[in-house]
Amino acid sequence: MLITHDTECALGILVELLNTSPDACGSERFPDLPALGAFVARHEISEVDSLTAADLAAVHRLRARLREVFSAASTEEAAELVNAVVAAAGTTPRLTNHDHHDWHIHYFAPHAALGDHLAAELGMALAFIVMAGERERLRRCEAPDCARVFVDLSRNRSRRYCDSRTCGNRLHVAAYRARQRAETVATG
Ligand SMILES: [Zn+2]
Ligand SMILES: [Zn+2]
Image (cartoon, rainbow, N blue to C red; front, side):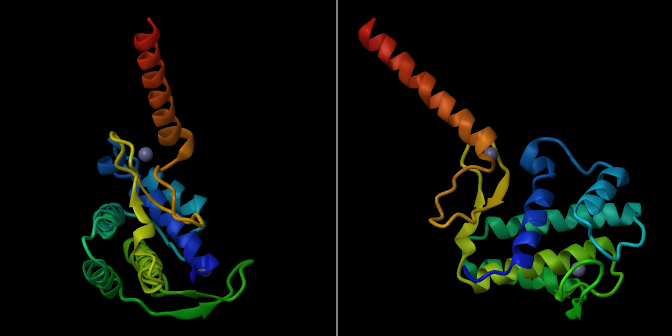
């Protein structure tokens, strides 16, 4: 797949962000600024000066828009959604080698507000996935009671669940119990 390590990192942040929404997990995981600040710190998101209630609201709005890309009915629709997100972010690509990192491109405008920063970076990561012809790797978990999203980076695109330790296993256990019940009935 023709995506860079930087894009892969951005996709990791994207998935984590989308799965903080009540739509995905039933409760708001970004209810306040400390929760948002912890996310920024954990991912070492650079050039974030300070966070306000406006930033939190912007991130909530962005999250809903980015999630739509995962449920787009066509590549055209996905491209339109991504273009709109990136265009609204005031994107300004520039090379940088800040801190301990090698040269890489920042798409966000210098010291952009967090919502615009994430819109530029995560929107471009989605643009690279669409450009690589890999849109179908943007998936929603197939567990019946789960609405989390993930990006399937497996070689054979075979991943079905958001997290094999939770949804995948839970379904395996359910299937195993159903088989046991069927056998008990058949032999009983
Ligand atoms: Zn950087
Ligand atoms: Zn799941």
